[in-house]
Image (cartoon, rainbow, N blue to C red; front, top):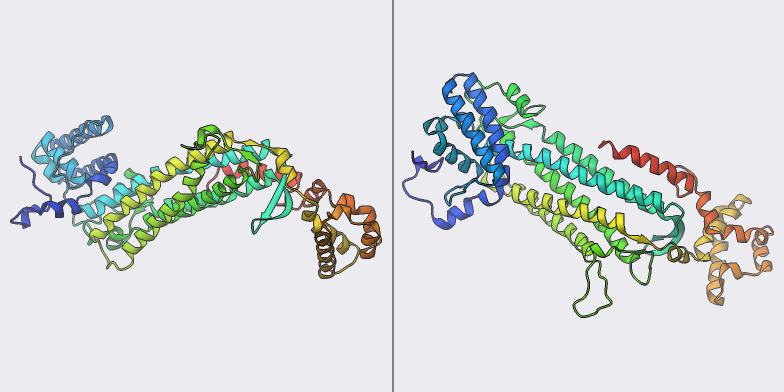
Length: 461
């Protein structure tokens, strides 16, 4: 039997070739093939339950779908030039294998509910894959925090030296944004847990399909409660693109810091050769290209998100072909993440920390707050203490000396006990260990954070 387009009966002429090219989605939606077959198999079972398919027809359809699944998995399925989309291609192949019974499979469903069901089935697997990759990156951050626990480094605000911190504290500061990303991912899975199948084109299925049983077969929590919403709902797609954008922003911020810290000017870390490149003209160069590309991909995912939101913003209710743009955007974001996350994990696992260079970034001026805090403990209001120490710092800068070189008499003018305590106050290790409150940078606090991170690692919410 010759199979024409699924919708071809109404038309008396062929579609213009360029129009057909614009309309076709087979170039990107083929990755839904196995999910389409799985959903079609469950749909066939329901059609058999209500008597639309005879037992013989049902058996033929299931055998045909199993054969197609084998071809898809082995990569031997042959697409044809007039295959409009993944659904058309699979139905065309089913006709080739079993003949007329294939024409009954589409009874009661539309490509509108079919494609959204396939997409949500794919999205759930994709979310699990991305979540596992994020966990690997989080584990690499925990590894760094444990390995570098004794290393002191400058903390920065406004990209200016601020206060000394443990490098482990800094590593873990990048763990928690990833945890929040995983929480977003869990929310997406909730959005993807209502089954559109059985909504048909927009008004619902006219046949007595048991949608609750069908949802259970396909692993959904429940069928979608409104057929009109179900075929047009792309919230999960938009949410995934937002998630991908925010995740890549978090990766970009980490990448930017690693780029800075690997420069000769900082020298805190050395990037592994396997994740860097050289210069075509300067033999000495070691370029952080992978980190730079990580930084750039944040712009790409943001573009995917804003582009898709622009598609959605003026659509009327129900299905419109504009919604076909969900898959290229989400698939592209997914493909970016499946490369970026393992690369960042590899970089963290293999970079080298130069602890002496990191410690050398600490200067006495960064401990000025310690002097102010000391004065507060002696009874001075913090604002007065802040002003007195600020004046002292300005004097040191004018005289070209460090705080450790200030005379005892000058210190005594500020407070009589200050000369005898200044060396301890200007010890970065002491400053770090003073910050022992929950979430602080002291050794004990960071050890608690490491344990907490390990607990967070095994759960998504």
